[in-house]
Image (cartoon, rainbow over all chains, first blue to last red; front, side):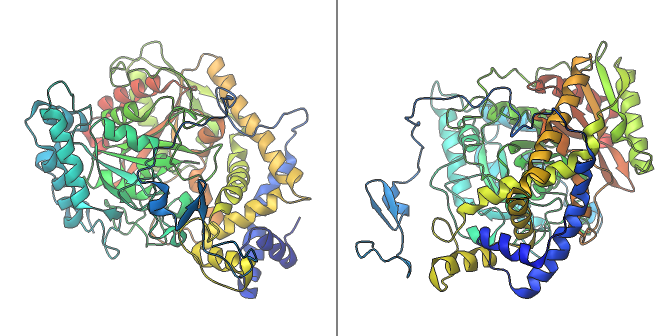
Length: 102
Length: 496
């Protein structure tokens, strides 16, 4: 399952990472070297084994949907550029077309 | 550079254990300001903040440390208010633990200058216990590395031999304890990032059970593996540090609502009736014979204390590195998506929203972080998920079942080397996979969620060697009991 340069460009786009052509070429080699080691997993008999996403003594417990207050050292207004209704307002990007945005 | 040339001798407050220092402050024999000032003066004296020297600290604030110390002194003087078990004890934090008074940058350009609006829960607990946070320490960027060479702010050097790495990713915290800046420092573990640098720097490092310590305010790398860990100069220092930060936290839904036993009162002497497993997969034929000899001596010491040493097998441990380096990058690729130029730190303006994301992230992340985000994105992407990520999750289940079986068969603890070799020279691990192998004996405990501790068991050519003890889930007390006993049996020679 060798990684190609098109794969690198595709996953870089998915990951929102800018990768120039020279770096993409070196990443093909680096990722293939690493993934070659991972191929040993394909030799393991895992039939009937249930995978685990995490290990804990308990499943993540549910709690009422009223999170405990996060102990902020400063009020939101002091570290957000602007704030409205409890949400941060950030600088408008050129691709944001909403004329009401800040 | 030799140790003696690199480090001036410790004296005064710096020579006291964490418990002794806290007791001295509580009694009024030592002013907390004196201890904080001594730590920061030592930092200057050894080049702890100097990129051309040890470069083990990223941020200090003498005025804030003095204010914290003054507040501790005021608590002591106030009638009825105990100053806490860490009264006036200087503590160093890894730079991925959120603090309101010092920046939290994870050793990354993308968070340069970022100051958290809240303290991590472990920081709140340290403050309540009277500790004085004196510095944030250098680390591999976003905890991705095993040498602290991947920091955007320059590599940290091992205070015992500056030509060598301190290990990583919590190398700055390990080096701070080894250099005598603090008796206690916090790091974080995802695959061995406390135990491995503890072994390289000749100090004690403990990774608690997953869920034992709150992760609230620990910047996420791989959430199913991450835990805050503790460094101590001695086992007692580490036990005291963990005692303070352990316990349930409603701000972290994965923290366990279990009582925390008293670690420092764990039995420190005979180990009669304790069965210690020696997993054969951790002692391969090609293990560095010098490391093997130190481990054999440690096992002999444990047997001399009355422990039964039993050969055991953890057969799926041979697959741990491969499973780990699929699962951890997969989780990292998701967790690090939040660093997009909008919500935190660096923003590089470019053409359009996507252009801004890509420019910010490619400029802000270093080479190893970029590599792991891409690796993680790849193993989660359509067509490769089943072959890599799902299979790694299944192998993780097998690794965890190995530990459960051995502990279920009457083995109380496991003993292994912490690392295959002592500290290596800067630049020695140029290939990423070679660096990944540094975690070969440590990442299994993270995958299985069990607690583990590294302590010095001797030296090879002047470099420390670490021995690792591993216990069943939430049995840190037994871990400390064995560590206390082994530390005492091996004597000061193993520590120094």
